Length: 231
Image (cartoon, rainbow, N blue to C red; front, top):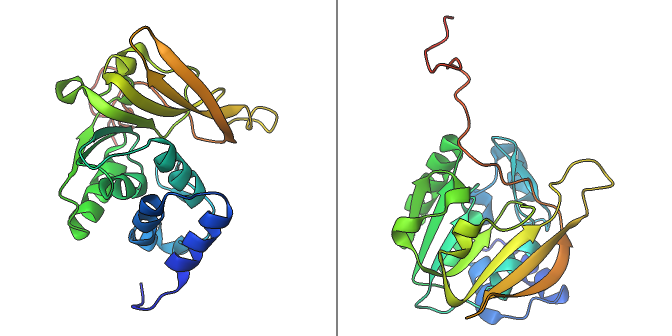
């Protein structure tokens, strides 16, 4: 990014107009070089307020959704945050500027390796990564103050609920996975606060996220019995 690239400030101004008011969140967005997280063909559009494709059939979320999700998490500087779905690493990079430590899980190894390289380039030493199944969370590091899902689920898996501290906040897109046009807008970004007796749930805004998939991707070079295919 050029030294005096005006695009980060222009993006922050656009986010303000859309209702993002948390100065710390806006500062984190401004200080995160989004061009490092997009694919080469899309670097010209890095600061457009739109989602962009990344490998493995995933997307880097629209900056507004990243900012909004971050704002409603109500982060504090001493908090530990679990992110399900590292993707490009952009959301984790933004979170890292606002809390003590980010634990982020990705099921696609190529995406995770690229994200880890970006974290290293940016010297984000408070981001911890894991290759794994997001539906299982990260029990070894639980409990967390906050949990953010960056893929859509019909409902939050119970095992993730158990990994959130009492009084903690979980934010997730709930509803049908983005599919045909009629169902694409049936997800709602939802904020859930764990109480002593259960959950306080608040539906926020309509969103479109890729579906959260259980398990790990199968290696196309392996057969069903795990042996290498002959080429």
